[in-house]
Length: 138
Image (cartoon, rainbow, N blue to C red; front, side, top):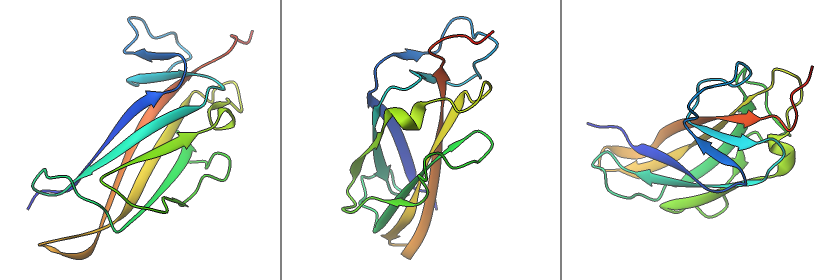
């Protein structure tokens, strides 16, 4: 039995950089970067154990920093109408750095789904992205 899959795609969010050639020391090694303070829209899609699109029974999302601290109270935010593909919108406040070394966000999506293997099965996936500071502090 395979596991369900969750994919994250950034569909809008201002200054996105894919795999920069040289990571400045203040940015972690992640695949996607957003300009600090920019809103962003993420499409999150779900497939079942067989790789077929699925609609979860429940979906919630969280936003944290790389240390697990919840950002802006974004803990277990429900998606009211689960679908095979849903949008998660982050505001500019969600991507503002709170401290000098606050350069990473983690978008986590979890929930439950039904399949031929059972009902109420759980899934969880997370996607880390970096924040590019508005100005380099000295």
